[in-house]
Image 1 (cartoon, rainbow, N blue to C red):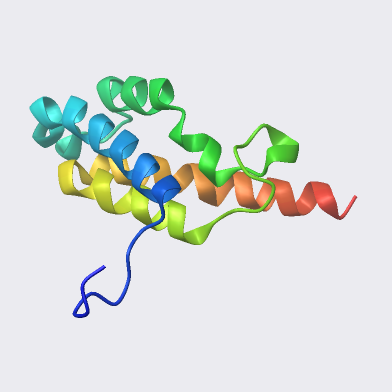
Image 2 (image 1 turned 45 degrees about the vertical axis):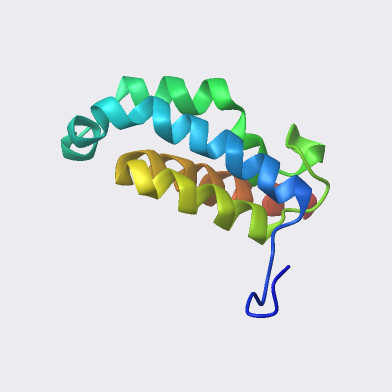
Length: 109
């Protein structure tokens, strides 16, 4: 890491970033169309579903990737997705909004 660089991603975060970049690249050809859509765009849905990235916004106890959600991982994914499509990024973000509240509610039962 260079002296001027304050922060560098871990190998795990760089791996997740590459997965998100690949998803963003798949969506790029129809990103403008998706961003104009008023309903869920099937191409974005398929790309996100196939990627498995939504597992990073759900705790492992409920089928997610990690025991505890990692905000940096979520930010890294969202940064890559939003470069391509606001629609794609919002779909990923909404997964976290819905799953987080369900996870918290399930723990309190």
